[in-house]
Image (cartoon, rainbow, N blue to C red; front, top):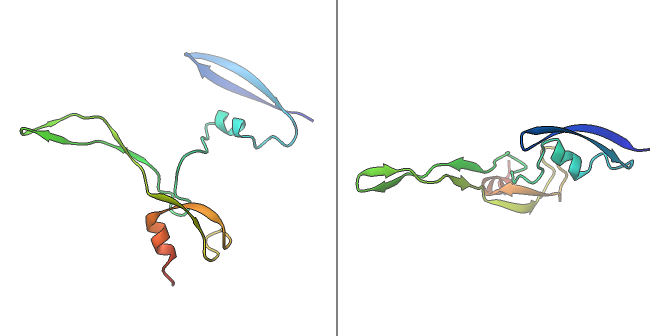
Length: 109
């Protein structure tokens, strides 16, 4: 049994209607997630949700602040295994966590 979904895509300011026919069991394909607008590749901390941010740089030159390009600041994400069950994750689960969350994981309550 095939799954059919209609998507409206925008390409060069033209709207196109696309029908996708997938085999059964493919409803959670990465292509559908990409078309739905979910990238899935965003690097975020699984525990606190910290992700990259875009900010500006201020360059001082002879008393004047000159405009510069934008800078993307990324969190320090590391793959870590949870030592014990925590917040919906079982013990031993691998996940991406920022350095601050890894530091907090080592502390006992």
